[in-house]
Length: 312
Image 1 (tube, rainbow, N blue to C red):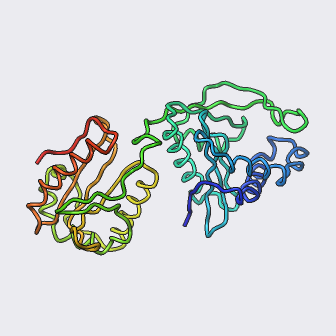
Image 2: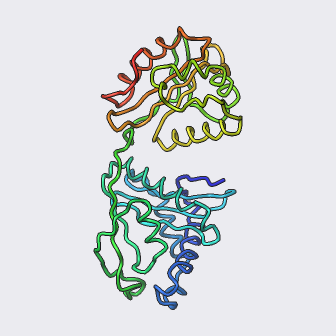
Image 3: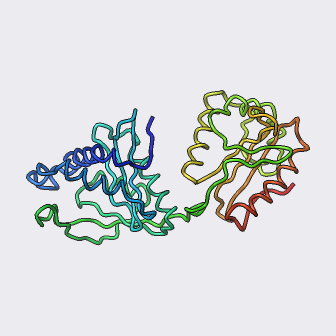
């Protein structure tokens, strides 16, 4: 399983090793062999160690790890994506896609509305990759000097991409819990799988008739197996970490295992946030109580002004 996290100084040599290996695999024929052969892991490691030590809020160095080993990385700052490389032995495993998505999310959190990256002309693999993700080839070119002032290549291509506004500001501390006399919210995660699955599969007609869920295809009338539900919960937990959506399980106030509902807070094209919630069929009186409390909580403790939350 691939894990994306902020780099530490101890990751610098592994990051440098990935960069050198990726350059030598991707740029053969684009950069003179003599230049590729002089690439130094030691020199690059010093630069990446300095980058990992920085405390500047406007820069990030991300690493992708598989079984604890660094297999890729991405560097971003206020201008855009400065680097994105994957160990050639792990190409075509989706790691570059994961790093790209996390890098774009970080740019959004930095408040960027337009991002830039440069690539060597002739790197058709990277060119196709970025076009697939909505980057625009502006046609602008420049010469980038390499070691000893010798250009690595005659031309580089400039790409730009508009970015979505961050769902919540970078400085906002997302609440992990919300306690009320009648219920308690807690970040939904894989540990809730069995109780969550039992809660909604026993209440499918009731949930499908709940405001916000009518006309939707969830929950599925035929239910879902345990593995599929776990996949959903894992995705919601990943969205929470990436700050692109926040899902809370609704628990009975006196227990940590009795799931009685769920609350979803996600971006909306017509509002600051789209919110949906459901409760179990055997707790119908809780629905308006939950709705009222969550509505007040969103207005007083979250950075939203316009909220799309079906009334009760």
